[in-house]
Amino acid sequence: MADDPFALFDAWFAEARQSEPNDPNAMALATADADARPSVRMVLLKGHGPDGFVFYTNREGRKAADLHANPAAALLFHWKSIRRQIRVEGKVTLATEAESDAYFASRSRDSQLGAWASDQSRPLDARETFEARFEAKKAEFEGRDVPRPPFWGGYRVTPDRIEFWQDRAHRLHERRLFTRAGDGWTEGLLYP
Figure 1 (cartoon, rainbow, N blue to C red):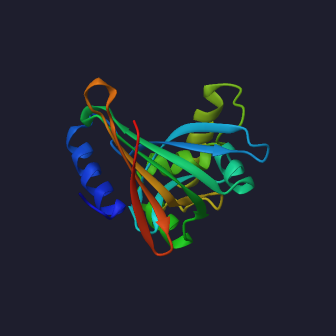
Figure 2: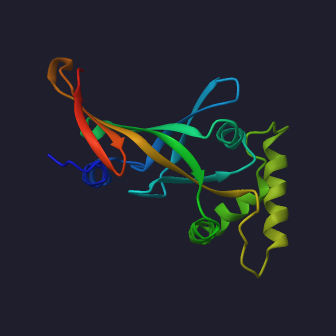
């Protein structure tokens, strides 16, 4: 049994990458706005380690507004193929500008252009409007690198709780909870 939640995460994530048919790095991101109204959506994990779990998004959309008002979040990785899930809860901070630049540069050109064209989470009158904006950005950046938009970047969830859930027969599941204690972690079990 691993006593380091990040080492255990790495082991489970490696198994999921071998067995999940699509997006083993997909995670549900739960936030709450200033009025404590919850919202959840799927995002993609793009970096992780002892300093936290990183995802990237438009910083003017609904999730960003929630995180600005209430900088805490929960993540859920659910890997049906291996019958496991991991829950993460913690504080949220911005990823560095250098991290955001580096990840943005690694995206496909169309994904980069899409970041410029999208007013994420805001009303859209017709799909054609978005497609026209995409084509306009494509023309604007023709022949040169697409820079990262100033309104787009990463967030890091620094966990204070990480729970590992393993399916067992007859709903007698195994649940291991790691709770941050200073610079380390304490570990315990939870009833299924």
